[in-house]
Image (tube, rainbow over all chains, first blue to last red; front, side):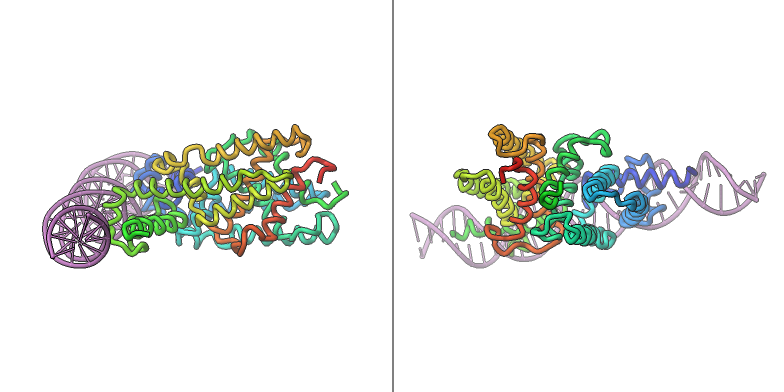
Length: 201
Length: 201
DNA sequence: GTGAAGTGCAAGTAAACACTTGCATTCTTG
DNA sequence: CAAGAATGCAAGTGTTTACTTGCACTTCAC
């Protein structure tokens, strides 16, 4: 990595960690620069403003998240495997970003600069998953007596609160390996047993 | 209500709404005073400092929450009814406070003044519920192949994300009547069907 | 080896912040 | 009605914030 990008990256990394912990308004440019081991002036020369840092951060996030989406594509044979994989992906992504996306989703409701960047965000995800749930209901794989939006909300509610508890609120331990963690599977299993069509599991 | 308490109450109400939306650091004493229709100086004369307002707010919150706890006491005949009632109570309480408690639980991780006041908070709740879950597992009413902590986390994950989506992130509509809302019962039912011991429902 | 780009450092800006002081005015209460 | 408490208003404090300017230094491509 060239020295020039290294500086920018260190700034973005520092901003990512601080914003994830203290939120956008609670994070100062001075603190970002300090943690990045860089002069505060450099931050402004590279990113123009605090909002500029946020924009660059969001861009980098979107880029990485795109990588996840691709990895998600191969939807597994069974609905259960697909959803469990999605849950693990959601959790892994959110944890790898240190709760940044989660914190930003939170801040979007109150900080205009953040709201601009988040776009559809959670509502979009929710809608998309609800469509999938509806399909699987029609196929008789998920129980039909619950609205698909509710199933989607239950799913995301579990994954997002799992991450929120651990990264933002400091409750519980982070899993060593998300792709194999037993606790995640148990949590998912509560959802799954409640969502699967009777006589199907 | 006497005029003197009225002033203090208006300040606390304003602070409650603003902090719920913008967080503790994002809320200014000027904004609180303005929304309360009161001079900023009055706020300081009554509450000494911004942290003082927060303390008073927490005290009032604890007092109201105590009311809920009493109402909760009569644990219903069936586990299902008990947990559904608890879910409705949690949601009603959080909504009535306009997401304040939720936002504060969030801020506690990063704002020392908030952390001091929140005490055990979510971890305490989680532990308490996990104990109840363990009891019901031993009684054969809840499935035994899932750790009680996971069951408790699933429960609170659903109720808290339900409120979080609606109050903080602006996703979905608030229920007109929490005690009767069908959506809440559906959401709870996903949890319940996944948590109940086989052949028990 | 020269020039341009990137960075550090010192100093400074204007605005916003929590919080204070002094005084005039209103409200409450005995 | 008188006294004291509660409030409003105007003007301030010192600190922190995002952001700027000017200058010296290094690095590296050509």
